[in-house]
Image (tube, rainbow, N blue to C red; front, side, top):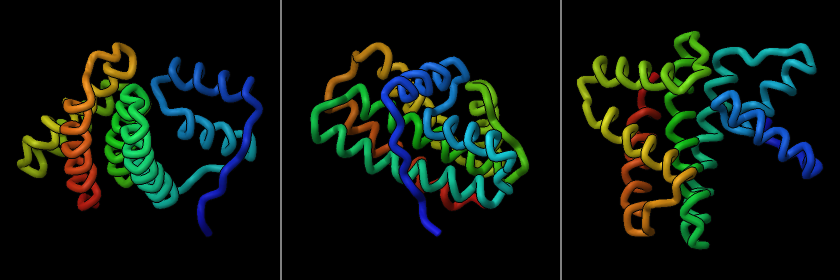
Length: 162
């Protein structure tokens, strides 16, 4: 069974984005969590891994669309989201739920050590810079294009980790 889309009234979209920002999560991620709570359901670790991977992949594609439109702010946020979700996928497979920025960084550090791959930390630092760019809008298109390619490498590296 594939993914489905839900159309929300604008008022709810705004509230969901505000709440997601407060909880340092992504709107789609928080939306799924709220739906599951409302239905008194939980995703098993495998379902959560699949969800995080699908969202990460979708965010990579959406980032390219935003870049083509010249929207560097949204490109930056989608790339950050793709990176964070790729890390959260690995954590979910290990029975962990990452809810704070620091927990994501700790997991990135642990994965990098386990794999002997410093690029994981470096590329995630790029993702973090993109997250900041979402708020500051200080990067030009050339920089964002370079970082997009590095985030694609990061997500691919993380995809290979079980």
